Image (cartoon, rainbow, N blue to C red; front, side, top):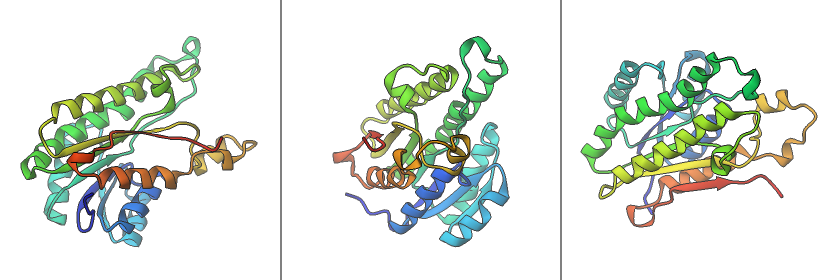
Length: 233
Protein backbone atom coordinates (compact mmCIF):
# COMPACT_ATOMS: atom_id res chain seq x y z
CA UNK A 1 0.00 0.00 0.00
CA UNK A 2 1.19 3.52 -0.82
CA UNK A 3 0.18 6.74 0.85
CA UNK A 4 -1.38 9.53 -1.20
CA UNK A 5 -0.26 12.13 1.34
CA UNK A 6 1.20 15.14 -0.45
CA UNK A 7 0.97 13.64 -3.92
CA UNK A 8 -0.38 15.78 -6.76
CA UNK A 9 -3.08 14.36 -9.01
CA UNK A 10 -4.64 15.90 -12.08
CA UNK A 11 -8.41 15.43 -12.10
CA UNK A 12 -9.90 16.22 -15.49
CA UNK A 13 -13.56 17.04 -15.95
CA UNK A 14 -13.08 18.59 -12.54
CA UNK A 15 -16.40 20.41 -12.50
CA UNK A 16 -18.50 17.27 -12.93
CA UNK A 17 -20.54 15.44 -10.31
CA UNK A 18 -18.44 12.27 -10.35
CA UNK A 19 -15.27 14.37 -10.27
CA UNK A 20 -16.63 16.17 -7.22
CA UNK A 21 -16.87 12.90 -5.30
CA UNK A 22 -13.41 11.85 -6.49
CA UNK A 23 -11.95 15.20 -5.47
CA UNK A 24 -13.37 14.89 -1.96
CA UNK A 25 -12.09 11.33 -1.48
CA UNK A 26 -8.61 12.06 -2.79
CA UNK A 27 -8.34 15.18 -0.64
CA UNK A 28 -9.40 13.22 2.44
CA UNK A 29 -6.69 10.69 1.59
CA UNK A 30 -4.11 13.48 1.70
CA UNK A 31 -3.66 14.13 -2.00
CA UNK A 32 -3.34 17.56 -3.58
CA UNK A 33 -5.51 18.16 -6.62
CA UNK A 34 -5.24 20.04 -9.88
CA UNK A 35 -8.86 20.37 -11.02
CA UNK A 36 -9.13 20.79 -14.78
CA UNK A 37 -12.14 21.82 -16.82
CA UNK A 38 -12.90 23.68 -20.02
CA UNK A 39 -14.80 26.31 -18.02
CA UNK A 40 -13.20 28.09 -15.07
CA UNK A 41 -16.42 28.86 -13.25
CA UNK A 42 -17.19 25.22 -12.55
CA UNK A 43 -13.93 24.47 -10.74
CA UNK A 44 -12.75 27.60 -8.94
CA UNK A 45 -15.01 27.20 -5.93
CA UNK A 46 -14.42 23.46 -5.70
CA UNK A 47 -10.66 23.94 -5.82
CA UNK A 48 -10.85 26.64 -3.15
CA UNK A 49 -12.97 24.49 -0.84
CA UNK A 50 -10.61 21.53 -1.16
CA UNK A 51 -7.34 23.42 -1.07
CA UNK A 52 -6.55 22.48 -4.65
CA UNK A 53 -5.80 24.47 -7.78
CA UNK A 54 -7.98 25.18 -10.80
CA UNK A 55 -6.76 24.98 -14.39
CA UNK A 56 -8.67 25.73 -17.59
CA UNK A 57 -7.84 23.64 -20.66
CA UNK A 58 -9.52 22.35 -23.80
CA UNK A 59 -8.31 18.77 -23.75
CA UNK A 60 -9.45 18.05 -27.30
CA UNK A 61 -6.34 20.09 -28.28
CA UNK A 62 -3.02 18.38 -27.60
CA UNK A 63 -1.06 21.61 -26.99
CA UNK A 64 -3.47 22.37 -24.13
CA UNK A 65 -2.74 18.98 -22.57
CA UNK A 66 1.02 19.51 -22.84
CA UNK A 67 0.76 23.01 -21.39
CA UNK A 68 -1.40 21.71 -18.54
CA UNK A 69 1.27 19.24 -17.40
CA UNK A 70 3.86 22.00 -17.39
CA UNK A 71 1.58 24.38 -15.47
CA UNK A 72 0.64 21.80 -12.83
CA UNK A 73 4.26 20.85 -12.22
CA UNK A 74 5.32 24.49 -12.03
CA UNK A 75 2.60 25.40 -9.54
CA UNK A 76 2.42 22.20 -7.49
CA UNK A 77 6.02 21.04 -7.69
CA UNK A 78 5.26 17.56 -8.98
CA UNK A 79 2.75 15.45 -10.89
CA UNK A 80 1.97 11.98 -9.51
CA UNK A 81 -1.05 10.87 -11.46
CA UNK A 82 -4.07 11.44 -13.63
CA UNK A 83 -7.71 10.62 -13.00
CA UNK A 84 -9.50 11.30 -16.26
CA UNK A 85 -13.26 11.82 -16.06
CA UNK A 86 -13.85 13.86 -19.24
CA UNK A 87 -16.47 12.14 -21.38
CA UNK A 88 -19.79 12.40 -23.12
CA UNK A 89 -22.99 10.37 -23.32
CA UNK A 90 -25.85 10.28 -25.81
CA UNK A 91 -28.91 8.14 -26.44
CA UNK A 92 -28.88 7.51 -30.18
CA UNK A 93 -30.17 4.39 -31.98
CA UNK A 94 -27.91 3.80 -34.96
CA UNK A 95 -30.63 4.34 -37.55
CA UNK A 96 -31.37 7.79 -36.10
CA UNK A 97 -27.83 8.88 -35.25
CA UNK A 98 -26.58 12.14 -36.72
CA UNK A 99 -23.13 11.40 -38.22
CA UNK A 100 -21.65 14.32 -36.29
CA UNK A 101 -22.25 12.40 -33.06
CA UNK A 102 -19.38 10.08 -33.97
CA UNK A 103 -16.84 12.87 -33.61
CA UNK A 104 -18.39 14.14 -30.38
CA UNK A 105 -18.39 10.73 -28.66
CA UNK A 106 -14.85 9.84 -29.68
CA UNK A 107 -13.44 13.33 -29.14
CA UNK A 108 -14.78 13.60 -25.60
CA UNK A 109 -14.27 10.04 -24.44
CA UNK A 110 -11.18 8.89 -26.31
CA UNK A 111 -9.27 11.81 -27.82
CA UNK A 112 -9.04 13.67 -24.50
CA UNK A 113 -7.79 10.50 -22.77
CA UNK A 114 -5.14 9.90 -25.42
CA UNK A 115 -3.92 13.48 -25.29
CA UNK A 116 -3.72 13.56 -21.50
CA UNK A 117 -1.98 10.22 -21.13
CA UNK A 118 0.42 11.04 -23.95
CA UNK A 119 1.30 14.29 -22.21
CA UNK A 120 1.74 12.89 -18.70
CA UNK A 121 3.51 9.57 -19.36
CA UNK A 122 7.00 11.07 -19.84
CA UNK A 123 6.66 12.85 -16.48
CA UNK A 124 5.57 9.70 -14.63
CA UNK A 125 8.25 7.56 -16.25
CA UNK A 126 10.84 10.18 -15.38
CA UNK A 127 10.01 9.96 -11.67
CA UNK A 128 9.61 6.15 -11.89
CA UNK A 129 6.19 6.12 -10.26
CA UNK A 130 2.64 7.18 -11.02
CA UNK A 131 -1.04 6.35 -11.48
CA UNK A 132 -3.40 6.76 -14.44
CA UNK A 133 -7.13 6.03 -14.29
CA UNK A 134 -10.03 6.41 -16.68
CA UNK A 135 -13.76 5.71 -16.60
CA UNK A 136 -15.35 3.27 -19.02
CA UNK A 137 -18.93 1.96 -18.89
CA UNK A 138 -21.08 -1.13 -18.38
CA UNK A 139 -21.80 -1.25 -22.12
CA UNK A 140 -18.07 -1.58 -22.80
CA UNK A 141 -17.73 -4.37 -20.23
CA UNK A 142 -20.78 -6.19 -21.59
CA UNK A 143 -19.77 -5.74 -25.23
CA UNK A 144 -23.02 -4.15 -26.43
CA UNK A 145 -24.92 -0.91 -25.94
CA UNK A 146 -28.24 -0.98 -27.76
CA UNK A 147 -29.50 2.57 -28.17
CA UNK A 148 -26.12 4.01 -27.20
CA UNK A 149 -23.88 2.34 -29.78
CA UNK A 150 -21.43 5.19 -30.37
CA UNK A 151 -21.09 5.85 -26.65
CA UNK A 152 -20.51 2.13 -26.03
CA UNK A 153 -17.93 1.97 -28.81
CA UNK A 154 -16.08 5.01 -27.48
CA UNK A 155 -16.03 3.62 -23.93
CA UNK A 156 -14.85 0.24 -25.25
CA UNK A 157 -12.03 2.12 -26.95
CA UNK A 158 -11.22 3.76 -23.61
CA UNK A 159 -10.93 0.38 -21.91
CA UNK A 160 -8.87 -1.23 -24.68
CA UNK A 161 -6.59 1.79 -24.85
CA UNK A 162 -5.94 1.72 -21.10
CA UNK A 163 -5.31 -2.02 -21.11
CA UNK A 164 -2.83 -1.47 -23.93
CA UNK A 165 -1.18 1.34 -22.01
CA UNK A 166 -0.86 -0.89 -18.97
CA UNK A 167 0.86 -3.55 -21.09
CA UNK A 168 3.28 -0.98 -22.51
CA UNK A 169 4.14 0.15 -18.98
CA UNK A 170 5.13 -3.35 -17.86
CA UNK A 171 8.33 -3.26 -15.84
CA UNK A 172 7.63 0.25 -14.51
CA UNK A 173 5.94 1.42 -11.32
CA UNK A 174 3.28 3.37 -13.23
CA UNK A 175 -0.09 1.76 -12.55
CA UNK A 176 -3.24 1.92 -14.67
CA UNK A 177 -6.85 1.49 -13.54
CA UNK A 178 -10.16 1.34 -15.38
CA UNK A 179 -13.46 1.91 -13.58
CA UNK A 180 -16.73 0.54 -14.97
CA UNK A 181 -19.91 1.96 -13.38
CA UNK A 182 -22.27 -0.95 -13.99
CA UNK A 183 -25.41 1.13 -14.01
CA UNK A 184 -26.65 4.70 -13.87
CA UNK A 185 -24.66 6.94 -11.52
CA UNK A 186 -26.52 9.15 -9.05
CA UNK A 187 -25.76 12.61 -10.43
CA UNK A 188 -27.91 15.74 -10.71
CA UNK A 189 -27.95 15.35 -14.49
CA UNK A 190 -29.26 11.78 -14.29
CA UNK A 191 -31.89 12.75 -11.73
CA UNK A 192 -33.09 15.48 -14.10
CA UNK A 193 -33.02 13.15 -17.10
CA UNK A 194 -34.86 10.31 -15.30
CA UNK A 195 -37.19 12.01 -12.79
CA UNK A 196 -39.38 8.94 -12.29
CA UNK A 197 -36.51 6.56 -11.45
CA UNK A 198 -35.33 5.78 -7.94
CA UNK A 199 -31.80 7.20 -7.55
CA UNK A 200 -31.23 4.94 -4.55
CA UNK A 201 -31.04 2.10 -7.09
CA UNK A 202 -28.14 3.80 -8.88
CA UNK A 203 -24.39 3.74 -8.32
CA UNK A 204 -23.21 6.12 -5.61
CA UNK A 205 -20.47 8.38 -7.06
CA UNK A 206 -18.78 8.25 -3.67
CA UNK A 207 -18.20 4.54 -4.18
CA UNK A 208 -16.53 5.22 -7.51
CA UNK A 209 -14.33 7.76 -5.76
CA UNK A 210 -13.32 5.42 -2.94
CA UNK A 211 -12.54 2.65 -5.43
CA UNK A 212 -10.17 4.99 -7.24
CA UNK A 213 -8.46 5.97 -3.99
CA UNK A 214 -8.00 2.26 -3.28
CA UNK A 215 -6.52 1.64 -6.73
CA UNK A 216 -4.20 4.64 -6.49
CA UNK A 217 -2.96 3.42 -3.11
CA UNK A 218 -1.84 0.00 -4.33
CA UNK A 219 1.83 -0.76 -4.79
CA UNK A 220 3.24 -2.25 -8.02
CA UNK A 221 3.16 -5.64 -6.24
CA UNK A 222 -0.60 -5.48 -5.70
CA UNK A 223 -2.01 -3.60 -8.65
CA UNK A 224 -5.76 -3.26 -9.10
CA UNK A 225 -6.56 -2.65 -12.75
CA UNK A 226 -10.24 -3.16 -13.64
CA UNK A 227 -12.95 -2.29 -11.15
CA UNK A 228 -16.66 -2.89 -11.72
CA UNK A 229 -18.84 -0.72 -9.48
CA UNK A 230 -22.35 -2.15 -9.18
CA UNK A 231 -25.63 -0.55 -8.06
CA UNK A 232 -27.75 -2.28 -5.40
CA UNK A 233 -29.30 -5.63 -6.33
